[in-house]
Length: 210
Image: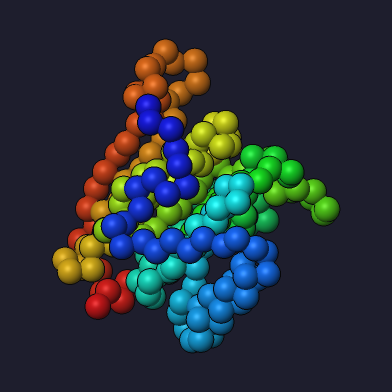
């Protein structure tokens, strides 16, 4: 299986900036943050991934991105409420997760679920979620699949399920892919270590797809 790179699977039009000093990086980072913050809470949100000296900023393109993520989260939440205390349900939103506290790489999810047994106490490091949601436009589906592998590999199997939502804006549909690790103890090849289920969600006006 091909090794993961922070730039694996990116769309053809991604932009790269190189910096030779921290001072220049600080200046450009402030400019990027200003541009992303121009619309306040109305849009231009982003997710961050970093590996060593390289960082990847994923721009959240529009409201449908957030609506699709929250709609899926709400449906999972409703299912979990059956016989479960609300105090036991914790969504990690886009918190940054690292393999170790001192690791020089990490990643933000669009949303994630942390079961009660993994919920960190006060002043404790962030623990891995069991379920991660990744959302993007259809052009970035290859990258979303690379992200799913990142969660499985860097959590060493602590992340058990990754659900990908690929928004097809022209067709007003969403492709849902459920990636899951094979059961522990089952003998599989590396190519079979991940199982996938796929379905297409038909147009749904509440998602606000334009």
